[in-house]
View (tube, rainbow, N blue to C red):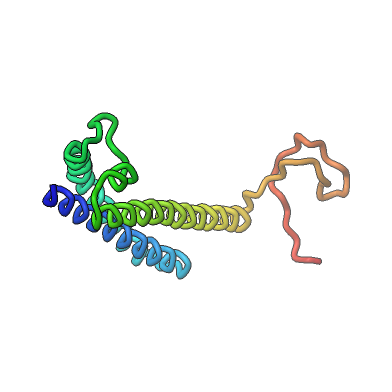
Length: 169
């Protein structure tokens, strides 16, 4: 039993380290995005792919360890026991370590999701700003609502056409 619990705790520690590494990479990616350092963004993206792959490769071993440890602790195999259930059934000091690892893992997963969403939002906003700038520079800005024509007459709401920009204020 001790061997299975030690193996589970070791796998959980590896998973926690992998998620922490991913968070560090997401922070690095954010910095590169803010600095508009495209080479660094590409470099971090490759490293991030490897980190995610490592997490995915660790998952089957962790799942199997949870299943085996759960059986040894008298928990049902199906559905797979949660870390909270394993923690409640395990003796000390493993109980506390499994509980702490479970809480830390949940916290890290939420942090990864937040970082990833923030980076995604920044990329989308940057692309929209770039697209809008190109549209202004190429004269491809179109009216989508009613307004006034260049001769001062009110235009219908279905009147689409290039918008004339003036530098006068």
